[in-house]
Length: 378
Image (cartoon, rainbow, N blue to C red):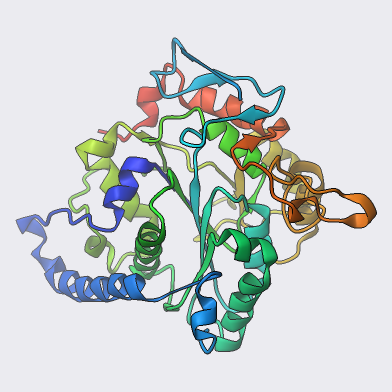
């Protein structure tokens, strides 16, 4: 998972890179993948479900102080997290989320969506071809029938389901397709966040938006590889790679002059690995709760479906008692079990909590005087 900043999103769906003569063996997969990629992007521009357009075809499925910190390099400013923060509409950031899932993930995707939901943000969901049409329809209807999603119109389900595997370029192609759709529908967002159904937040969106309000929109949070000798900086280089998403975006950012100095080597996720590491991280459980919190990361993965640790996160970290996590935008009453988020307030007002304090501490470390070491390796 990576978080891409404002400048990178402008180029994410058109970046072409270059091919070196010494790698002509990649030309065949290059052109094959190019054809697939163009097809996916073209489909993205014409096929998207949203809560506002679904009815057209129901057959388818702070206060902030801007004094520059001495060791921040201008990327971060101190903030007051003792009280609600209110930012001008044009200053408060907006996030764009992709949440992906496969067969059996529709309810998990909805749970993750509701846990990271905020009216300021944009959301797009993708279920791959392993999921049966009935389950994809179930997800689409769940989005369509949610009164908040229908009113705000910021949640979409991708009409085209792609065959996705961690082997090869399919994950990259789907991610680029989602970015293309988000840019087509609304380019008014600052960071792109890629999650799966097995991801879950450890802070509220108010925490996240409050802290991100004081960051440079150019920053990209991506755990770059320590390997050297990259030669290609385009999607097609990774056609035959295992887990190619873990290299593609890193390669683009760290080999493009415009982005090199914006990369922070941290993907803002808590992940636990077996030792020795296997292909995938291990599942997180209630035993990992304290480590997750102490990591100060705003997200964690991966979680088993309906694991009890998710309920603990909802209760102790997110304050989630109904559909959505607590937020200043929820101004309705809670009498008799009512959902306070059923009434929307000003979405540029944030109520940061302990999660914002933890995240603030993390960014102070990441953007400290040793910031140079967090950038792309030379």
